[in-house]
Length: 135
Image (cartoon, rainbow, N blue to C red; front, side, top):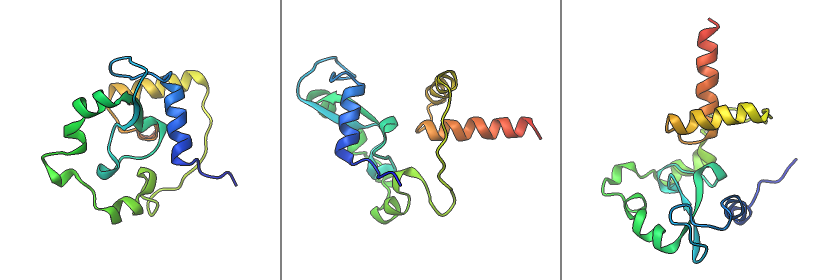
């Protein structure tokens, strides 16, 4: 059985994917990893939820994300543990599937155009739409 990637490995892959460059301003110094959806709000340590930013952009651009005025968006720690990696394991079964590059491009487009949380949500949405068409 394959071992889960450590957080530091995932962060390293994020830095490499982003070319060791801030995704917001393009500098290559004082880099940090930003959770697009914070863990405290249900976000995960997956590449699809991470991006590289410099410390200045992180501090200046994402203050309201990390410290929301509306505290009701925060998810209690117990609930975050239950839904580790953004999946409620009492209602979902994890499977591994490989897609051709063309399908991945379509999934990525659907994900970003519909402002979904991650690729998995985009895949589930596309599958549900496809299943409804076949009924």
